[in-house]
Length: 528
Ligand SMILES: Cc1cc2nc3c(=O)[nH]c(=O)nc-3n(C[C@H](O)[C@H](O)[C@H](O)COP(=O)(O)OP(=O)(O)OC[C@H]3O[C@@H](n4cnc5c(N)ncnc54)[C@H](O)[C@@H]3O)c2cc1C
Image 1 (cartoon, protein in one colour):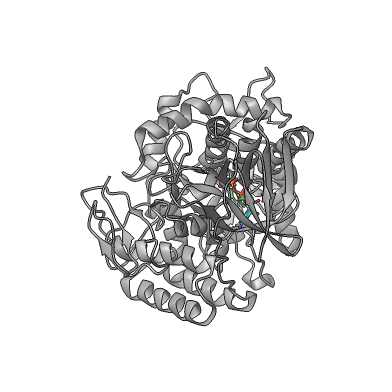
Image 2 (cartoon, helix red, strand yellow; image 1 turned 90 degrees about the vertical axis):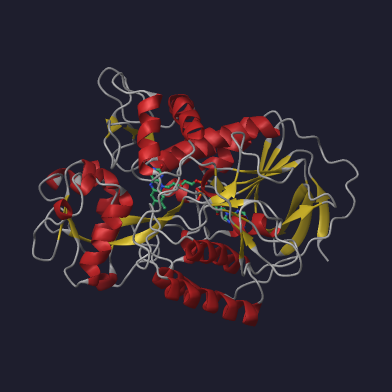
């Protein structure tokens, strides 16, 4: 039996940039922020390197930024949402600066801006080269700690609590070794992406799709789960004892002119795209994947473009290389693609509301429609801040819980830690940079086998959503590349899916608009 507690305010699950922005925007409403690890730990936000995209310079504007976002998203970006994001971008950067985020400045005080892949302008606000995430999160964490309306607790959410009408009323939480059912005015899900489900990833281990799975189990609409972005240039330390998660050689290095070369020392990106090293991420990731699969090797050569300035300009990357005994001033950096960002997630509207009353979703666990099939570099910190603020403002109006009766909570099964590597390997192998029907079916078989042994744990539900939707999408688009369906379909369709209330194992697809019924669990897909 779990203990019970009522919180007069809003629960925020997760303490990355999205969750903390929401908590700050909720003030003066009370916020209870739940984080499995102390603040600044276990979130992708603090690891972000490149920075935050926003149209801040005089030769740029929100329309141009939205157009680049739409082009990168390969037909699936919601244009209205993209414009909303890019219009609110500059204010979000200024808000973070006002909290103390020390963005790099030009001599005249203007924000310094980097050029990153698939941006038509230099528009990424950065901090000391590659320190953006850490510096932004330190500023936001300081503001959270100084806020009298925010309580931060160490704990992990296991399930959402719902009343008979399906309204989300709180969460079942594990804290201090005990389980507590906490009822609250509303819940803001901010649990990040799902890179931790893959064997090679840049994400912290705690980020493994648990919020997505909790929302799906509660019946929330899920959008585009098959779209995972693979960062083309994780530093491949396989020959240096390995590193999990894989450190990242930021995109900004390529923005500075670093070249991708094979073991023969020759650049290879010109063969794949007119923008070469600055081509969209999926193109670069596949090119590197092919180089490695064909035994030709892939390296990022920054000797000329950055050279002796490496330690000052990219201290984070420099430290990761040095820790493995590599000196990027003297030798090219070995690179490989790694699971990096989840474009799909819990479907939301412009105010971060999900399809379930009382449940909001923000940041990487959400699917607002701004990323489509492929995220534009540095748009995710931006999305976390913009929609985090929007969620906080919207959730202020939620009424406090009064006399909420005992809500049934079903703790999910737990996947034993020793079984996680099998799932991660199967995900990287079969739902990675290149996918096939046979591989995805093998993956679903592996997920079923693990569920049979241990029960339907949250990571299995999240992995299942990715695999099932990837199998159903018989085309290649953005981050989703099917070797057996290499063409892009003429009609661009988003995926909208969900688990039925009667089961946890999506096994079939129903056509647009039909609500799955009966005892057979199903996954829904609809055209937008
Ligand atoms: C190495 C790296 C570099 C990146 N560089 C950039 C960049 O330069 N620019 C950019 O825009 N984006 C970048 N990204 C992506 C960006 O950092 C993330 O998309 C963004 O920070 C997501 O923010 P978030 O708040 O949604 O999630 P996160 O920051 O990942 O936070 C999620 C939080 O939820 C918690 N959590 C997870 N499960 C539970 C649970 N069951 N219960 C309670 N809490 C839970 C986590 O511990 C964490 O506190 C990068 C990502 C990585 C990994």
